[in-house]
Image: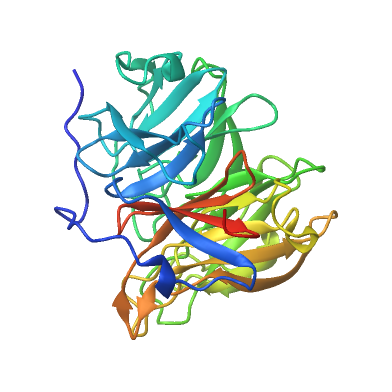
Length: 362
């Protein structure tokens, strides 16, 4: 029996999608609304036929969006699963859609053949922790064919065995392996073209002030490494409680520091050809935005420039305008490269998917 959806912060309010005319992108780019009908849109996955699957916090629903005439707008928005517990994470592989539901990972087989009559979800595993604090899991398949799954810390800051890590398993839910430790809460991971290096975001702890600690962008050079949580934050700041007896030098420092509390979530390297050459292999990161900072931060998509050796060469704002004099218009949650080379951005605040393209208006 499917579990009823729950949420940590009570009922989600419905908001309108942001007006694309108020959103800012670099010259030559434009923003359109791909769909404004995806309440609480979170992680996206793209099927082999171009279907955009979206996990959400909306009554446990998972959505499928189709753009049959390829005009940059989804004509159909279907609910393909419901009544799940926080199904924010989705991943597509070999025709099947995988969905996270806190302690469970589910699979909808041959989903693009059954968008109008979706199959009942099959249980891949039901052995993940049941905690909902940092239990909303994004999913992704790596180049090794493994399904990568985060196990966030069930707290703001604590030291609990079996948590604060990134793991992987076979597509059938077997052969679990830990990949990285000391990760408070990663809600986004991807692999760099060419090198195949794994990169992930990590949200820093709360209640150390407005400007500490930074959210992190991390690179996995060696499986099994420890990234510091809960002993050390942002590579150089011991935790006031758990840092005693630990040296930050003993842990892997972040490859890049974002702002404090920006809530860096989904990320994707740009692998399309539509954007100009300077954007190829750029890492786009959704900053969901702060919830308890005196002056709000984040609420944008940033472009992180990474070279072939895995060194970060700089960061710039790519999509902005979701804050209007402190008033929230949207909260980016994930980014994905569409088959035509456009960049899709999910917004759980506005219940929308935005499409960013380059070139002449069609």
